[in-house]
Length: 387
Image (cartoon, rainbow, N blue to C red):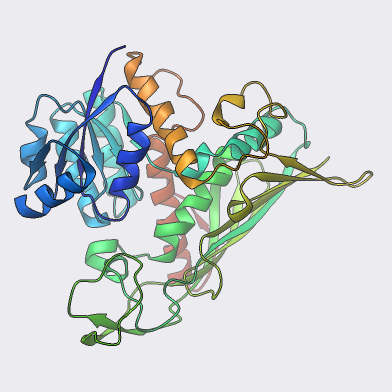
């Protein structure tokens, strides 16, 4: 089997998850890690058992053993790293958001298309077996015509004023926090599952904690504050809570909330699609169950069981019924779709496997977030998403 060389830029919170997922495929060699400087890169490479370490991503892009670049850097580096990889003719797998703005994302989409490189964005929840089951059921018309979609993605890791992250800084995380970080996941997921496109939005955004205590020292991603921390009080310019009405291209309506200040909610992603014959609900924190709602008979719970899933999506489940699969397994599924596409010599214009999100999908997510911010700043008015 043809082996593929992979290099990753950034090995913080999400970087090791990329490496673990790709290693599970069996035919990808993890060649190199690039980070802020050579010492950090070497430390990360040793921890992750990767042979090469580069003190900057430009040097790694010169390595002929690296055919695929993974971009796991903070948001503000997504555009320059992605653009540089494309310019070198490398296939590119980028964390979301694809870029800080829809304009930047559009430029990356167009550059990747012109260069003919495979491009992907890690909208990881697509890889869950029951997400793919829901998508297949809707495509087959088994819930009738979808007319309403609702849900949320809420967390509590920014509940206190001592909670802090670079994601709250406009120059590093972009002009949105809750929407850009997690709301974009919800928007991609419901569009993927329903096959519908969000065309208009009405946003109401809040900064629940307008001032936060920024630690002067280094703090790991999502770590709680320490009693010994020294800090500076800073003003926060991005939202930590948002509620959004949406309209789809089919005429269907929807609503969702994205929030990072909701106590007790760790990674609470949920969507429900209500159709003319039935409804489907998937909840990430109980991700091995799919609720199917009926009017004239008892509603059902479909468990994650390869024998019960449709044949077209069965390969996304790797364990027998009763054996739980989770976030890391879904992440591996999207990597499998991406790398099998590369391994088989497919072109970017060829049909993609279902869980494979492209730069086009990343651009659409950026455009939706931009439109929600525009709507909210105008006082909460219906705003067209400019694709």
